[in-house]
Amino acid sequence: MEPLLLVQGLAVRRGDRLLLRDLDLRLQPGERLHLRGANGIGKSSLLECLAGLRTAEAGQVVRRAPLHWLGHRHGVNLALSPLENLGYAAALLGAGEAAVLPALEQLGLGRQRHRPCAQLSAGQRRRTALARLLLSRRPLWLLDEPLAGLDAEGIERVGALLDAHLASGGAVLLTSHQPLPGRLGVFLERSLTR
Amino acid sequence: MSRLILALVQREARLWLRRKADALLPLLFLAITVTLFGLGARPNDPALAQSAPAVIWVCSLLAMLLGLDRLFREDREDGSLELLQVSGQPLALAVALKLLMHWVMTGLPVCLLAAPLASQLGWSGAGQGTLVLSLVLGTPVLTLIGGFVAALTLGLPRAGLLLPGLVLPLVVPILIFGSGAARLAQSGADPAGPLYFLAAALVLALTLLPGLAAAALRNASD
Image (cartoon, rainbow over all chains, first blue to last red; front, side, top):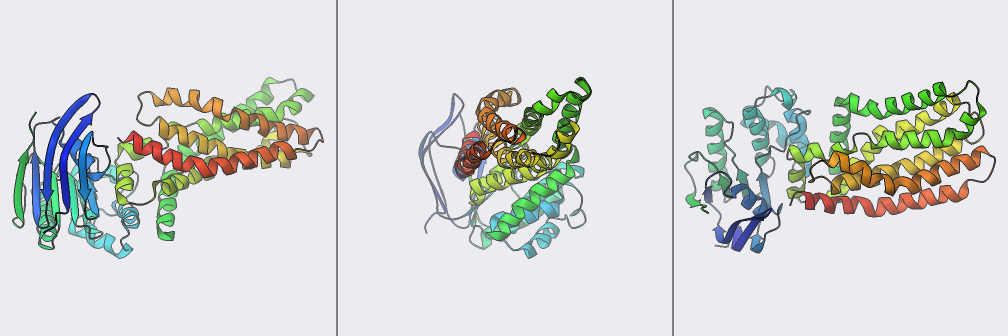
């Protein structure tokens, strides 16, 4: 099976620090790869490299499918409501307007959809960002700390999202300091060390 | 594509309307500084009317610079810029629309306010139309240059201090030709030459700067 993401000999630099080198990765449909490592080891920088947001010092990243990106910053404007943020994201991602409300409801934000995100909790902002994953079908998900700020019920919802995505042939690469929710897919783990 | 353009414009318009103070600040600055010039001069001083084109152009330029450093900062800090980059949509288009909305919310009101402020300085009648036309052609160039420099300095510490120092030398020709056109019209001469220069500068800036600003934004997130 052809991998959705192929990484060969990757080196990642942030400022004057070489964070990672000679990194090889393959991510196939149905796989979830959990990247672990201490704070500052370079997990977020690696994900930025894989998403094309950061230039690699060396090596090659091949993405064979469109991706959804969830960085450690939510990508949510605090002056706008979840509905307005998702409406904008839907236009960016080429999704229909009709997908916005069901996505918010699936993340438990139906009642808060008109409130400015500045008035929402950190967990609710994270849920708004996670709702973007449901707007359009993109096989490759790169998620940086998707569980940050979520309560137990929110983590369960993310588990259901991951299961549904993996069952439909998608793949996920994510960082988290917590055990991953969900049951489906091939569980892979990779620890980054200095 | 039209849905994307509409969504980008709608988002910017909403953000401007929810930050009314930011939208009003350039206008208040312009109105207050021009009024202070009037109060500081002798009553009915003809020199004030003569210097009105320069006064209005300088104050408009400074008003347009206010808040430029915040143009892309919020999008970078909240992760919206990353989202835009990863979405696969043309970043230059998003930058162009952001700058267009910046001009609509700051430059356009400045143009509309210019004629009443000119009258307040004792300059009435002939040449006011040229002043407004010079601002209509010149203020978008100020926004485009300012936007490019704001993108260029986005990842730098103390960008707020650096930005005016970098923008001012670049916008001096616009100031010279803008106020020059209004001055020529005020004295009854033909202002076509400087107005053509401003129009050419606008076309050049529109063609080049959104793309360059987008490239600078990609660099800033690297």
